[in-house]
Length: 412
Image (cartoon, rainbow, N blue to C red; front, side):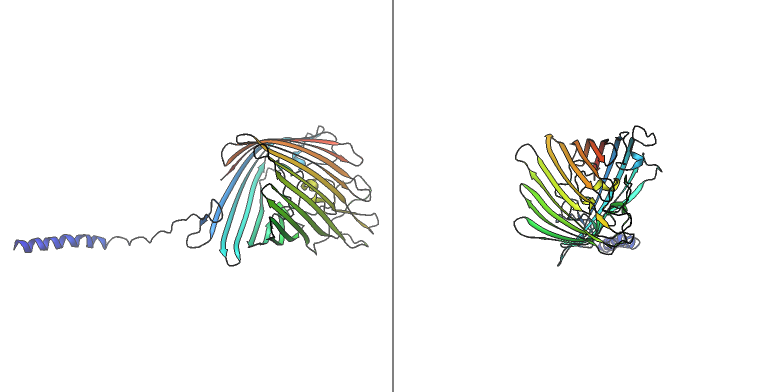
């Protein structure tokens, strides 16, 4: 009898958890944790449930700037609200800038190669802005299928030596961050590669035009605006990358059709450029960069600051019966070396000369800039920079401008 009672009691105890379990919620589904994707570099992770990889990046810059142009003020070097001259009290020579970047990089391996979708934007605010309104831009947005790129990205025409200093891109091709219609790059042999591109020259980063049109002039005749785009611009580049450095040879063609009807309906503008960057066998992380360019009618190929100067791709005569392309050339060089642990010294300089027709003023200038960059951590860089420019224009006195920057930049 006792054994029977004990057995019944044990059965009742076993039934209690079963009764309570019937009132509990169902067990959770297994969690698909994020996995690291190391096929495309650091920071990528697999999107749960897919074989695609994603990297989310950001950057924050804060700057204090001082910019001054002397009283001989024939042209504005940059945004008019941020340049001060001795006789102009309306400008803001001292101002502060904050800029935040964000970017998404999505990649998937396919039978056609890696398919990549990338976009990056930024928002900035300058205390020197006249209306105090932050600006919002998207400077990259493209899809890449293997070696084929469609969208808004850096052109293959960008020189291998771009610039070692922060501001202006003194000796840089202005054709960067363009609206690419089709861009294709393919590898050759022994470190050489070849690329070709069709692009829209009317729009660049932030919506600015890449075709340099009418500006203020000191002569009788003024350049006129472009007509609407009917033929895309075309460019090509051959590049070499090796252990001791890299080099690139580039060329571009652009249709020039004035908005005003002229007897010569359009002209074919062209440009060529060559650049190199060499790792020197002395010092620490020491590099030397050089580049040169010549153009008839694609002024931004020489220097990205041409959009702020009284220069144009072309001019027409008084009766609007003739179109003449502007001619120009530029040379530049840069030097970079690590002078102390985590501290790099950079120096750049260059000269640009532009000749225009029908009384439109000729413009030439040279730039010199240097900075010190201290990498406090792998993500945080502190920089102090100074830049000097001397500019000459037909019929006016030379103008000098000085710009200084203190910057902190953190990548994450």
